[in-house]
Length: 160
Image (cartoon, rainbow, N blue to C red; front, side, top):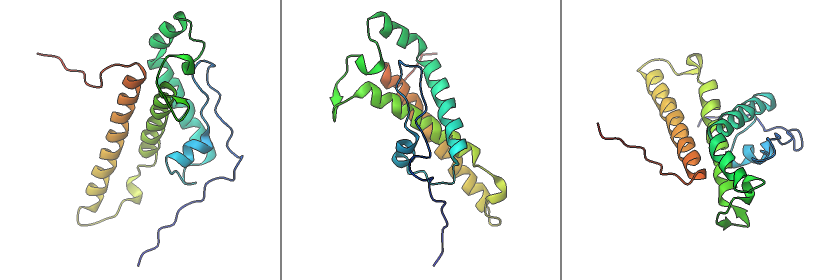
């Protein structure tokens, strides 16, 4: 029998929402931590940095599309016409997913440390390959979520 130690998440109320630009929604860090099942290994400070970086990156990628939506008279992302699920705009859900995938990729990359990998029998290489696959999967989900917000195809293909 083996024991796996995990760090407890911060106390409730210790992680305020990260304010966005007013058009895109704020991100609730406690909800993010709960939704992606993130324990306290990622500190309050590191999670805040990851969320801010995610918001800056995703907002920049969506800047042109958001400007088109503002010009069409939509005061915020939640006002963009979209189906509702559970009383929430799918566009807001897709945006939140983009932030979540970005954060997961960033944290997986940040905590990738060869010193903590198992030694011998090629285990380190196998663990590293698995981590690389996780990061790539998170990045693919991020790309899809950004495409979904814009109602664009998830596949970009060109004939050579």
